[in-house]
Length: 135
Image (cartoon, rainbow, N blue to C red):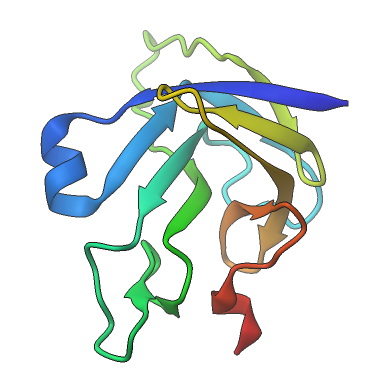
């Protein structure tokens, strides 16, 4: 079963300064190997093209060299523990889930959520591991 994730445009300053294109609402993440399992997670679509690495590639949001023009990360977000905060979630995601990210321009990105050691999960797009894993 494929979970459809709706995203919204990132603020203009985030697009310009960091390359963050789209962000979803908050999701609960589950699964083996998950880093930061008790934090809400959001799906983020990043453009790497504004961060050239000097060797014909790009720098991804994790600071690694890549040839991929975009990165799709499922990022843990901080939580303020004050006794009053009630988080609302869009739903639940699990490592290994197939998801479809519906972008606001009508395009879609499909892939599988994978865990990474000591890092937030990421999306393997159409069965192709991002070049950062080809080291």
